[in-house]
Length: 390
Image (cartoon, rainbow, N blue to C red; front, side):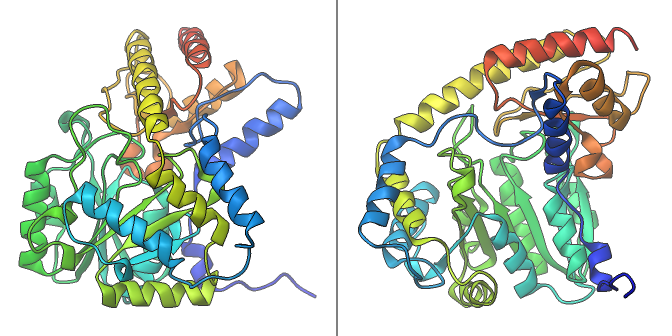
């Protein structure tokens, strides 16, 4: 028997480098090397016990079987109320689709809307799954550069230039991974006007909406006429330290939500029932945990930004949201990929090169500050020591 012949589309499917770097870091740890993990986007907090208790109660009460593919009615109602209140719009539970994590909404939305050669504009440097899925299903991925000089937002002029008569979808992510940048109200108004004029949909990824350090979160779905053209992604992984629970959801016009539900039926049947009961408790229970976590992240952000800016050859914009920094390392004598490998091997600091998030990430690193203040300070000292030897 020869080697299997894979479908050609597999050559178009990318990966998420954070998990590859995590695997390498864990391998080095197994060999006895001391590693500080700044590569993975995962809160270092435990899921609050009231949420865990709700899941346990649901399991004891027998909620361990299949449920409707779009989600249990009780959770969809709570999500609709939550999104309605936080985005100041009316949401019907039938417009909510629950999925195991937020990623499936990215996949299912693009599968449902994009035909071969349709164009999808996406932010870059950006979450690598965007480009990967667009290319995988045969769409044409059009990168929209996020620019450091405007705090890692994109210029509206660049968006205008990227739009064509083949544009089917624009992906937004604010607050943003990997840069921590956020779109302004003026940005959103301009984007909405373009979406109406050129008749394309918006997929807005708002999983970091509660991890904001200044101002209040603003969503394009809130603008007049945009609910009908917007698919919103949110979930519990980041806000409630529930990454392993796999609980996310999409908000979409009913005719699109129906297609997302059909894709759910054909892929994973439904999301774990007891997880959704935990999700209800997360949204309706005490929110003190979230505010405390954001306060802690703000302190870490300030320490890591100041520390990076104190290292010769590195400069770092202070992000307004998420838990990532995206420092510029173009003044150092090696590439960002070489630097990331060097820092892992030389001083045991695991982080990602900017190119893990697309070609416009060249010359940068991404560091997650979802780690303790003590470890962050240790990592900064190690990076300073390593960089001084270059």
